Length: 339
Image 1 (cartoon, rainbow, N blue to C red):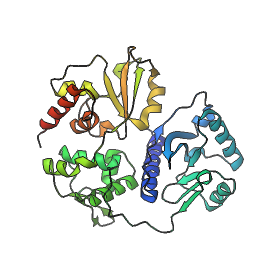
Image 2: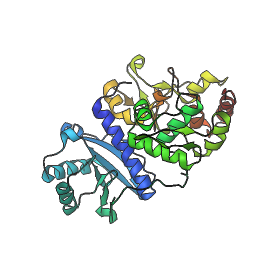
Image 3: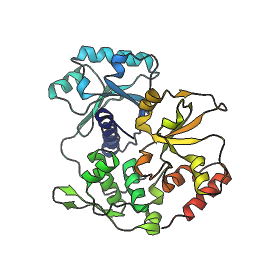
Image 4: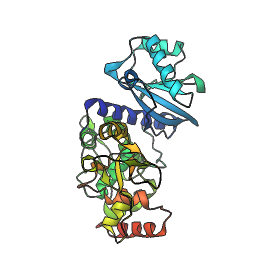
């Protein structure tokens, strides 16, 4: 799946924002791409829009593209007002990669909510201001759930992909995530007691303490379904669509489960808006002809070796299925893995 530099940058900054919320505040922030109706092109060209929940409030993050940064606070205020008119909520948070001290001071004076991952969060609506004064030491407390990046690395190890001894920079490039997100994943794996992530020169290298079934027993409780959302859509040119076979459709390929009438495909959640534009996807009503497209917290293509999602991510996505036939097929899938 090809991505532009701008799209990769947007995804890295999203991961950084989610990691910052988790590490600095203990808040599990999951950002999903969102499209607002009748949004002017000059807004869509300058910002990536993400929907999430922050401290119990629905919020919309306006991710400011560095090459398209508004010239002044007046222009930024106008853009925010345009978005607010089309957003059902009332909390909009500007998301920057970096900010100059002068611009940061002006945003605070104008009472604009904003986040700079790793540096500052200011949300006057929630009476919240937080600044990083010094580097935060990695926590030794095991996470309740692995982040998408930590889960991605763990599944790659369980699938016997070459991970042992790789450094954070190499793995970040390999899986298409930010180096900062990969560093936090190393912290999580180390805190969970399943890996060592010591420094080798200027970078950190990952060494897993177990593999195969032994590793699975240690990490299963930290792993969760990668599926964020499922949409029933019509795909005008399905042969060109880059989605991977997933859900019950994939389970039917791996087990004796009968193939469902509706095909299920999986794509990275960060790619959704682009795929809608480039492939002309349109929503259809439940029961009408179409395909179910899952958006994942990580790119399913990062672990797949053909046009079907990997077996472990598939298992995690269907293990709690309400249909007993599907749940049983999921257990059969897990038992068939060559640990």
